[in-house]
Length: 113
Image 1 (tube, one colour):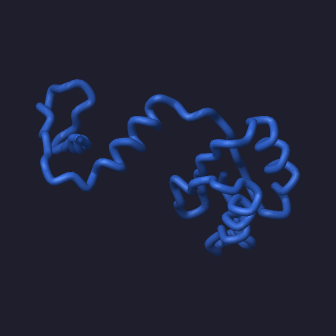
Image 2 (tube, helix red, strand yellow; image 1 turned 120 degrees about the vertical axis):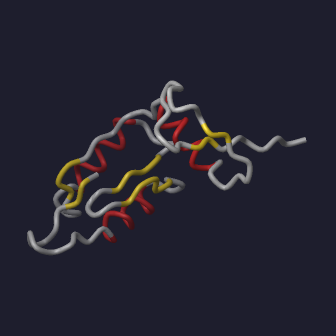
């Protein structure tokens, strides 16, 4: 969701929207937070309920824009990769490997025995 600032020159206050999400969708996880954008993972509610509740509070929370979608396979992979970023061993991809970028490193998963 994208939050509007009270005045164009001010930084938007994300606290009311964050408190709303935490109280309305217990167990939701904040995945991203940028200047005026919040991204959450909500695992227990239907898409219809999420749309209904956010729409009903859109003006009160100064929500400029929002979208609701199911998690994509790409998002699952990115979240998994972020979780693994603390590993010590690294594998450097060849520059011509599919999806590789210069100096991209892949961190292998730990094995659990």
